[in-house]
Amino acid sequence: MISRTLAADLPAHVGRRVRLAGWLHRRRELKSVSFLVIRDRSGLAQIVLREPVQLVEETVVQVTGTVAAASQAPGGAELVDPMIEVLSTPVESPPFDLYRPVVAGALPTILDHAPVALRHPRLRASFDIAAAGVAGFRAALDGLGFVETFTPKIVASATESGANVFGIDYFGKPAFLAQSPQFFKQALVGVFERVYEVGPVFRAEPHDTARHLAQYTSLDVELGFITDHRDVMAVLTRALGGMHAAVTERAGAAASLLEIDVPRVPEEIPAIHFADAQELLARHTAEDPRGEPDLAPAHERWLGEWALREHGSEFLFVTGYPMVKRPFYTHPDASRPEYSRSFDLLFRGLELVTGGQRLHRHADYLSALAGRGEDPEAYRGYLAAFAHGLPPHGGFAIGLERWTSRLTGAANIRQTTIFPRDLHRLSP
Image (cartoon, rainbow, N blue to C red; front, side, top):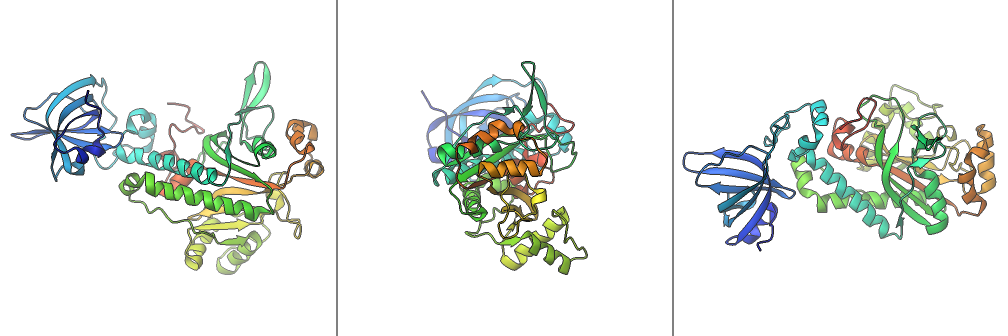
């Protein structure tokens, strides 16, 4: 039995008889010879034929042949004297040619035909990068003693206050799709001390923009026994460092194909307090945002440029956001109670991560809910963990698709989302 060989491994088997399997990516016929280019999960391989074969692109084939060195072939090797077995024949053509280096289809066409369109190497590359990033995220946190958890995505009450939740009928009872694993991961600090999760979250926000989705993948982290939000920022820095290193190590070919620069995450990311950031903006731009409770996108872009210019960093922490713009569970700054022990991480001028220290005493939660006019009874299950004692803790969440789009330079987050769900799209 000849075991299957991947296209990328052909150069290591020169002179041997091997078996390839994949899709017919391209067919070229010359006067005296024909070529087939086969695509598998590792890349492309060239097959040399004495006689042409009548196969269409995307036919699934199995090819047995002898590996020969060939400088003009992908990877420097090709298959000669082949025996071809057809495993499956397509009955429809792709919406655009998958063998062309540049994607010819517009974004709606790509999304409508995603099961076949994503076979294009350039379109697939973003998802190889995302997968590598998740692997690096997991590896970094495993190395710091975190435990991966898997929490419910159907919940009895909204994770955050507000109306941006999807309601569902749960055996005749009202329920919701979870906006975040926030409450669960806080409770699990009392079990494991350090937890993380990779999973879907749902936001019923009627935005129709290039950066919003109704469902996305969240990389969530929570850790206990912290001093303040700066401990959380340090863990985030390690996690991002692991993600970027993994892209270089595991998805270098995809990064090269997209011609992207994978920036090194500095050991210490520069940080600026929210109030100081507003002062900078007031002094150096035509706007005066002082007194505003949040940063506008244009302000984030300016701060990203400032961080790159002044600190040589494509990352910037903005800390101490006003309490009025943070969830009720956010810990206030003891010395400046109007500000929080929270942060946003900007990456290339766009908010990528939100995190901070949480309240951890039961009485503080009752006060915080009362201060916002919330009924503690609606949070009974959530508050139970604090009634039994939790240490000072905090965490953050990274939107995987947003990170991938920012890293690859995608103009629309849907380009880095497999089968996106948004205001208009519920299929495929």
